[in-house]
Image (cartoon, one colour):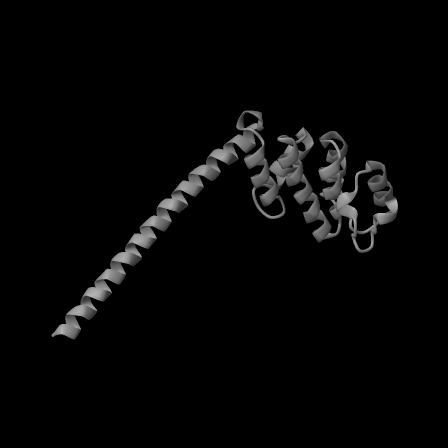
Length: 161
């Protein structure tokens, strides 16, 4: 299967299922390590993928580092859990930037009772923020509807007089 992995173009790397191959590529300084770590998240156990995802989160290439955070989100989705080390990195990054989607995936796919305290707080805070945004939008739409109705009423009054 190694013949289908192209480290230069990333072709086939989403199918990577060999942590030792990823480790060797990391040692060689290959490109597309972030892409390949997504493959590991898909095809390996969480215990096998997690150390490589963590290394990927520290890659110099910003794009590949972003893919490592994507891999963390996929790991949460596929396993319904993350390792303590992955939780710690996501907590440190916060609910923004590279980590935003990974944190969202974690909050969505890891049962609340299994989340570490910061993630529980973040889930509650996100729900409150969502509810407040919903109320804000409803008020905004209601105000716009009232303004439109008043405009229509004024126009109707002018044209009939």
